[in-house]
Image (cartoon, rainbow over all chains, first blue to last red; front, side):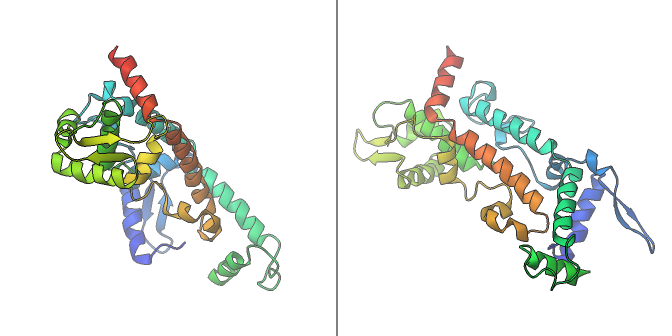
Length: 135
Length: 137
C-alpha cells in the first residue's frame, strides 16, 4: 500500500476513534469498516485526518478575523463559495466509488495475464509485477 | 489545507493598496487592515519581489501597486505567498499517478485542484473591490 508499517496503527486508531473502523481481536481479527463504504465520503475522511478542512481562518466555526467582519469582507465571500465547492465535491465521492475504480483497474492489470511473462507488453507491467510479487 | 495568515495579510494589503491613490505608508496599511507592522514589512517585500508592488523612499514615499487590479487574481497572490497550493502531495507529479497504490484518489484530488485553481484565477482584486463597494453602499 506504500504506507510505512509503523505509521498504520496511528492512522487506523484515529479512524477507529472517529467511528469509521472497528477492531476485532483474535485469530481472524483485524480492522473492519464500521459503516458501509457507500456511507463514508472523502470529506468524512479529510475531516477526521486533517487538522482543518476550512480553506481560510475566517471559515472556521468562530469566523475569527482581526480585520473585517466576515459578513462584509469581500474576500470572505469568495472563500465561502470555494469552501462550498470543496465540501460538495469531496462529500460526493464515497470510498465505495473509489474502490469501484480500483477494482476496475485491477481487472485491467490482472484480467488478461497470469504471469509476469504474459504481461511483458502490458502498459501496467511494473504495477503487475509488483502485484504478482506481493501475493 | 488552510491558507496561512501571511497569505490573508497579503490579500488585505493588496486590496487596500488597490483602493488607495499614490504612495501609502507601512504604518497606514498596518493600522487600516490590522497587520502587525513588523510582519507587514516581510509581506510587502515578498510582493515587491514578485513585481506586484513598488516602494519609494522619502517624505512622500510609501508602497504602491504597480499592476492593474484587474490583472491580479487571488490565485496569483496565493501562489506567491504559499509554499504549495496542492491539496494532495501526489498531484505534483500527475503523470506518475499510476505508481500510486490508488490512482483514483490522486485523480479525485487533481480534479478538485483544477476546479479550485480555475475558480481562484477567475477572481481579480478589481472584482473584490467592486463587491466591497456594493456592500458598503
